[in-house]
Length: 222
Ligand SMILES: C[S@@+](CC[C@H](N)C(=O)[O-])C[C@H]1O[C@@H](n2cnc3c(N)ncnc32)[C@H](O)[C@@H]1O
Image 1 (tube, protein in one colour):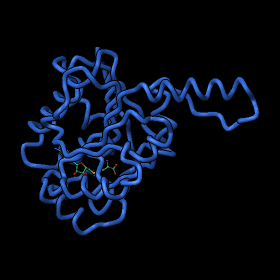
Image 2 (image 1 turned 180 degrees about the vertical axis):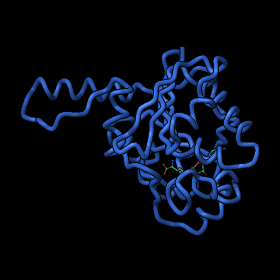
Image 3 (image 1 turned 135 degrees about the vertical axis):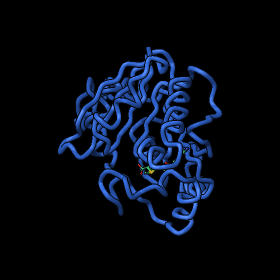
């Protein structure tokens, strides 16, 4: 993972343990954004969702109508962020129209801090949930966004088992035609073996984001 460790995450076993994150978030009050900010990420992510960048040309009446249609489409997408941490992704996506949004993390500390931080806008929802055992029903989510969470899961003990539980849960929660978008430092040879399994009932597309230091895997539920 990027940050204070080796690029392949080999020295980062703490990232797979809940205690590590609880301690880190107890000590860290500020935000920490892994890999990419929403402003950069959305260039790749929005086309996957088949939603467009919003035009800034407010003078044009047609343009305003398109903008409203687009906002309605974003609002209709039931979107779930897993392993949200103290990233600004949730608030940035919300402001960009993804208002049907739930952000989750297994760290009670960070979820409490995020609830306090966004107390003025209680519609930006945060809940404590472990990605290996989510409290959502089957087939209810349109879009799941993971930025750095599978990477963290893969750093711990029992990493293959935990990754499998995580991916089974994502598959279970997705509607038919829903998407799991995984933003990661993991190159295809280190991620596709985990992702491409018939039991998840999805197809997987990979793409390098810009300079090839990050990748996005798009899993489309069949
Ligand atoms: C590398 S950080 C990424 C944080 C944030 N998504 C970002 O982009 O800045 C990984 C996050 O995943 C969370 N996490 C790790 N394992 C998890 C699990 N089993 N269930 C839920 N969250 C988990 C950690 O608490 C941490 O917040």
